[in-house]
Length: 284
Image (cartoon, rainbow, N blue to C red):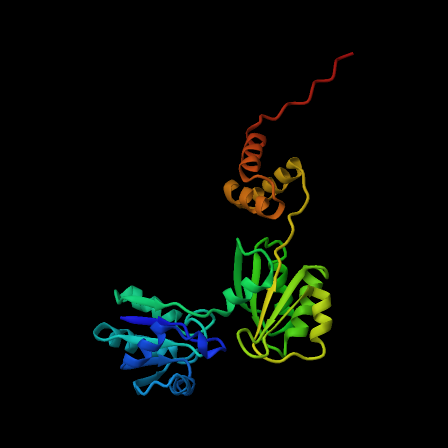
């Protein structure tokens, strides 16, 4: 069996009882960085010294088959440096292969930078998306942000402190200077900081330099103000470009707040309405 175990994202006191017990009894651990795992064992006062196998972004694919076979006969504990494995960390390919091979996968829940940042942000939490790291290069980053311009869910990102100012400047340029943004720095640690403001305000703040582990939470887009007739026009334009009517109605509904069913039925009626021939001119 494969056991995905969440580890503290900063505060050692967040190590769960289940995690401690799993570390005490583990015989084999696949770790993102074995040095971090050794430090964790020592910090928690655990004397167990299991076999440690390095599994990181650069070798996960080549290690997967070996680890899946190992997990058929004994428990394999999987750890990332912080938080839950597979979430912007190694483990996805291993779980995918294990599922295909019929090897059981379970998890020991625990700390999550994504959910912690979302919870303290003060932005809507009913619907959200996790977008991982933005692209490193400016052009690619702005392109990725433009694709999210109409996303109405709250968005959570990881970001390097060295790229934070540039990324926030791009957020202001692509999503709007007044878009609400929250930067969460060093979550659960001694220097934890949660900075709230508009995209342009936080870009200026970050220009002086920021240190630590960073999560950025961005408010979703406000629905575009549009009447039903205009919305139906957008739906039909998407249909003309090759989208299914149902999908087009859902897309316009998400961007405008208009009812999906209203858009679908109105667009369907317009599509099916027979074209009226122009009246004939009278003969003189």
